[in-house]
Image 1 (cartoon, rainbow, N blue to C red):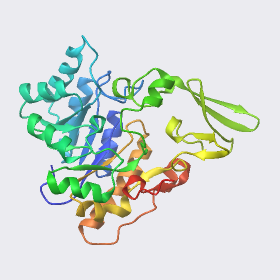
Image 2: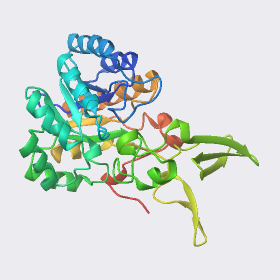
Image 3: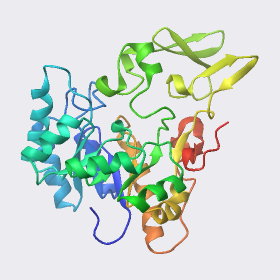
Image 4: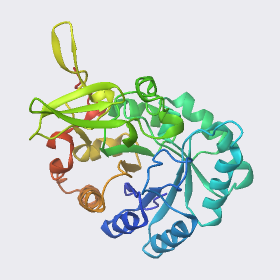
Length: 330
């Protein structure tokens, strides 16, 4: 969507106030969702009414930013009108694109609103050129949000075959197949694809036991940390487990993805847009992360050294990782 060759900074907004903060901090595009089950961050206190989205689109457009509406859950049988209405409203209210995962919704948007740009959600888990080509050919998809499981070399190989615009650069690191975590569905009875993120607040419980803060997801104990230490995000894939005499985290110790230092490599691999995770995050978090990446993207565009390490205090465990881009997992 950028026409000047600069990497596009795509930022989250869980509320209208967060959207204004993201735009003012330098976002090129902001993604958000309606206040219902059509988006994968359907939490109390988050998301947008139609009136709020209309006001937010006007605010963003005046500032030169774009608004992308995530309608990225999979419809319930017999309730298609809820998802269709969300697409209709996004088009009516002036959204610059919709972010979809379901084949039927992609077909509906292409048929009813051909002028509305269609992006493929990470929930679709399109991680190779053949899958991406299917969505581009059949539904006119212009952007694909890649799962956070690919190396820079793998992203380059995909882009050598077919245009693909987006990668994640900061935020929570999903180490399972995006949106399709069977562990989470088993533990909570709620599917990430249909009911939102893997750790719903209603299923997360904390308790102090023997000087430790114990986190549980449903009936599963997933971590124990001394009560004065930062607690990791309570997802099963980031839990601490004991097996075969070894106790530790399955992949990496809890950290957040920060790919600021890899912007030149990602741009060289053909990425044209950079996505920050965090629609459930606070306004102060959004402001600091967006402003930091705005400086990084601008520095890269000018051929200057990229400032890094500025966001460690906002990361899980106050540490960051390049994640699958470098694949240093155990």
